[in-house]
Image 1: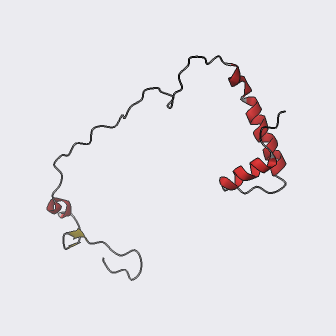
Image 2: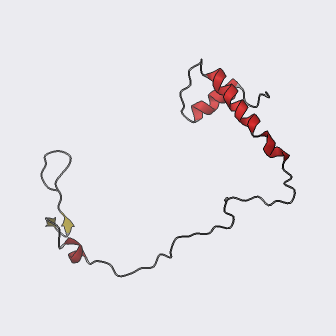
Length: 103
């Protein structure tokens, strides 16, 4: 098995990713990562001459969202008409932090 990454590399990757690795786990993780990299070796055997790189697996995928078109909406009065309580044009709700009085 080829050593693609060293224990020093694995420790640096773990620190960067904020993964806690004990000293005893480091050799096994290094061996596992090197085995994973080795398992990808057959990919290098494909003839990719003339193949354009893609940045999305579906090719020329464009924005599939609808256009953002302004449309008439509720007025403030309509939005507040079913509110159990309101104050100065806003919903009046019970406080969830502290004394329990409405805010």
